[in-house]
Length: 250
Image (cartoon, rainbow, N blue to C red; front, top):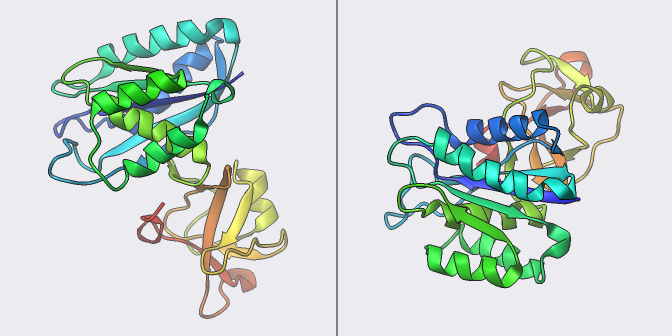
């Protein structure tokens, strides 16, 4: 059974260990217990506004998991205990656990997620949406306002068209090139796409690696976005991976 697990608002300005690190740690511990097989964590940017309390970037962290149905309640309970134990002082963490096949109106959850990218939402509304859709949503310290981001991040991951995968790929030195086929073999990336026109590259096309190699979530796949090079690079490469700055819209 597929589940989406999302957390938000677990850190403070003094604590360098961010929500992304905690999401990855939670996924790792769930796997260690034999309850699920977890996918990579995605970061979802939410609305940055003076009325929204956040530490640095206001982003929620979500991961998908194939879980044993009998362990769903174990995962929910452990997730809450994990946030209480690991959260930074002064943080307001929220936890969302959703089973996509059980969501009565997935479009509503997705709409909530995209609304949270452009307007201020409150936790009463978030709890109302979660209750209507049969989704677990809970707070684990502080004001509990992190439930808004946790629900929003779940909706954005469910959409399949929002977010950057946490972390970067170390598959070569900046300036080196790989074929698309080699990139697929070395990573969990499933598509390499021209950022300008959306064309998917062929397996034998060469891509020059930039300073950071990161994937984004597009059409439910881990996609590496590239831009054309002004002149051919290493081994005739005509594409280059997008920089972190160029990926800010994802």
